[in-house]
Each structure stands twice: as C-alpha cells, then as structure tokens.
Image 1 (cartoon, one colour):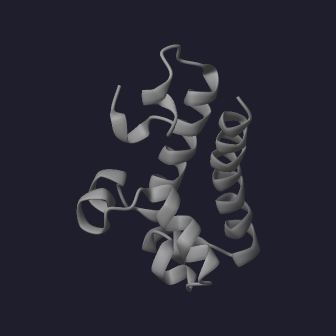
Image 2 (tube, helix red, strand yellow):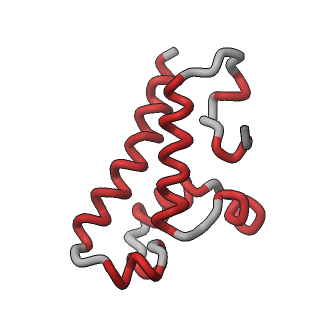
Image 3 (cartoon, one colour):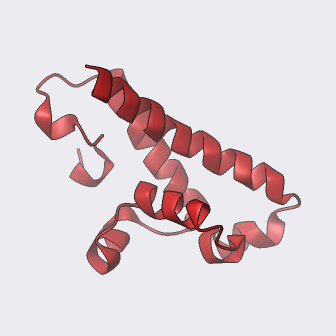
Length: 102
C-alpha cells in the first residue's frame, strides 16, 4: 500500500476502513484527469494532488493548466469536467469531515 494514496488520517488510526479506499480512488481519479502523479507533485511543490487541484479550482485556473491535454482535446463541455473534479474533491472533503467528527 503506497503512502501517497492513503487517507490523511491513516497514519493516526490503526484500523483501516473502506472510506480509505474511497479516498484512494479519488486520488487515482485526479491523477488520471490531470495526467500528474501525486509523487511528482509532492517532490516538486510539496503539495499532494488533492490540495493542488483544490488550489487550482479556488484560483480559477484555466482547465488547460489542470486537465491532461489528451482529455482536454476530447472534452466537449467544460461543465462536465468541473463535475468530475467536484466529485473527486467531494470524496476528499467528506472523508476529511468524517475524520474531524470522530
């Protein structure tokens, strides 16, 4: 199990949960959409992919700066891609909220 795909709370808890898998799936989804790896982002910007995508959305960066170029060429509607990002980030936010409540 690669630490780059672990939910942020994983090192603090001993018992794994299915929610960790949901978080990992969201990270993998973001890697596929952006064409960037969490490992490379961590080594160059010291920021994980979830934080990087969230920052890009908060700063309203153009999709061409965020989305994998191959996907960008095939993308017909920007709104659809925004929806995909929101779903992936929602997995992160709901996981973070659940941990904060524990």
